[in-house]
Length: 440
Image 1 (spheres, rainbow, N blue to C red):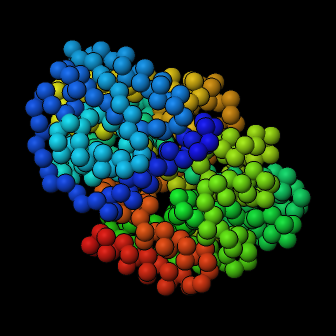
Image 2: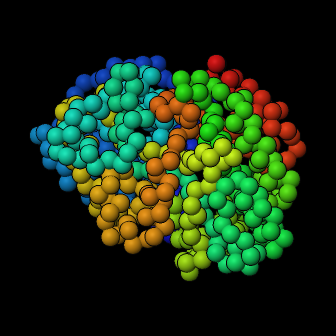
Image 3: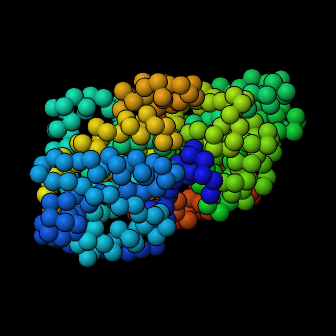
C-alpha cells in the first residue's frame, strides 16, 4: 500500500466500517460477559486506561495519537496506547473481551460498538456528553453527528471523525467534451454520453476485490432518490419505488457505457489509475482524491451534489466513533480519557494527518483544514445532506454490519454493474440475501 497519507487514510477510514462488517458476518457473537474486576482487562496496570486504536492513516498518525493518549493524567489515572491492525481485528477484539484483557476505550469498526452492546460489553457514553456540554465542546459538534449513536439505553459511542463519499470530476475532460458538470440525474446521463463519445469514463466506479466504492455508490444513489435499504422504523425496505427507480437509472448508465463495462472487476488501484491517467471524468470517491491518486494539479475537484428526479439530494457518510467498555479499572477514568482525547483531536488535523472530516466545527475552520477548497466545499455542501446506511431511518444499529461490506450488497452491486438483470429482480435477490442474515 502507498505511504501517501491521503491514500492510506482514505483506505483505512473505509475499513473502519467495512472490515468489521465482513468479519461480523462470519464470526458468531460472543455470549454476554460480566464487567470484570478493576485490575483486569481495560487497565493494563492498576489505574491505567488501555486505549486501542487502528491504523487510520500512515504511521505518523499513530505516533501522534499515541502521544496524545499517553499525555492523559485525569481522574487519578493514566493511559496506554496500543495499535491494533485491521487484519482479523474483530477476532482480536472478541478474544480479548472474552478473556477480559481487552481495552477500556477504543476506536474501531463503525458498527463495532453496537455489536458489543448486544453482549453487554459497552459502557454508555451519556456522562461523556454531559461533560462535553459543561465544557462547551458539545455545541461544537457538526449538526447531526451525535444523534445516530443514541439508543433507548443511552449513547453507545462518541463520534470523532467522518468518512464521506463526495462526487469528483476532472475539469479538463468536461471542457474537452464541451459539457457542463451534472446538476441532476438527467444532466448526468446527458454528460455521460458526451464524455463517453470523447473517450472518457462518464461515471467511474469499481467493485473488484477489496474495492467497496461500487457498493457505496449503489446505496448513495438510493439515498439520492429519497430511498434507502431501511424504513424510518429500521425495518428492511429494499423494494420501495424510489430504490427501484434508482437501480433502473444505474442500469441505464451501464447500458449506455457511461459506467465502464470492466468496472465490476476494478480494484481500488484500478479505479485510482483511471483517475490518475485522465480517463475518469466523474464519480463518487472518498476525501482527498487528488492526493489519493497522485494528481494535485487542480484538475480534479469536488462537484456539487446532484439532485434526483424528485429533487432529493443526499451523500453517504460513515461516522466513525470512540467506544468505552464495561471492563475498565475505572469508568470515571474512561470517561475522563474520552473527554480529554476529544479535546486534543485538533492536533491531528493541525498536523494534516487525517484524511477524514472532523466532527467539530472549530476544526473545520482551522487554516490547516480550510487551505484545501475541496474540504470547504464538502463541509458546506455535502455534510448538511449526509445520510448513513441506516436511511431512511437515522439510528445506527448492529444490523448495519450485515449490509456494509457483506456479500449480499457486493453481489447486488456486481449484478448491476454487469447490466444482466432488471431492477426488481436485482433488488429482490438483494433483499433475500439481507433477510437470510438479519432473519427479518
